[in-house]
Length: 129
Image (cartoon, helix red, strand yellow):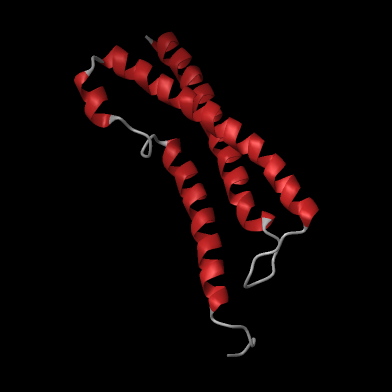
């Protein structure tokens, strides 16, 4: 035991890392629509309706993650002002909690970029036809 800490701090670090990895993996997965996919439904729909469902699901993700991301900023402010710390490491609680805020804002921003790219590429496809 080089740093003279109890073994319980591993659980706290692992939990914090798991939440950050989950949020970043979700953001990466949403770039190519591999996370949120109602595949069995969209396969049965005509191509146009499937595209509409894709736009609707992207809009829902943008709105939901934006609301969660920006409303969780208030929670982070409260935790920072109360100077709450985690039990084992004694680090501020807003550090692990910031994963939700950062992840949701990244998800919302990435999905907005996906929508803009889709619109731009759609315009290019229409011009090339």
